[in-house]
Image 1 (cartoon, rainbow, N blue to C red):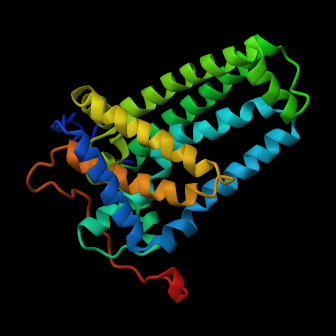
Image 2 (spheres, rainbow, N blue to C red; image 1 turned 45 degrees about the vertical axis):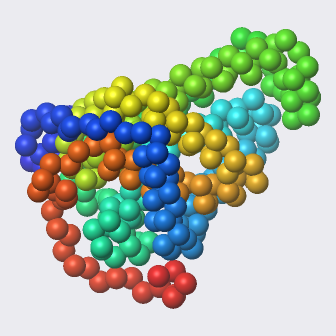
Length: 288
């Protein structure tokens, strides 16, 4: 395939997009703009993003049924590691809204036509590897402290966590290790996927630009990571149902954070080839 490329962009040369310095105010403004994008057609995104809490409940039920209670928290927190990839459709909607194009919900699937799909898939694969590594690390930490035996019950396991030394060791070390995984994901993908959707620069440039953005703006970027973590935690409390609102707001906000951090050269605001007109699916009015 002549058009297949991963490491670099379509011209086979490495690009280094310019990175701006941003402030804390820029972070909150990106979040506000993300909420505006969500509020433009909230029923669409709640409908689409219900899949996340549904999958979450399924995983929790599965681990509980298999006496793997120790993996419930790693699985729930692991959503944050995969979040940048799952937000692809939301970035696309924000991009279209920014350009005054139709933002009907089925356009989330337009990402399939992006020339950067190979690079997007490569970075998505990297996040999947990190997610699996996090689960294996969490299980290894549990085995080191508790042995191979599975928890007897949820109540007994929770009680042991907060009343014993090994329980607190699991909590403290588990959160520290989880923070390191989250920091790696933040540093390598915070604006990687929006950049690839907007400009086909290749996987290396997308990751490298994300790293430079974090190094240039450590305070604001760490604040963004904290906002994401706290929002996901709050959204997870009501049986994960709040994620149907939190995820789209964060996804749209990530696009606007990208716009604030990365300078777009004149004439290159949208390097994607125009999509040929297609017949729009016919849906009930409440889904349009």
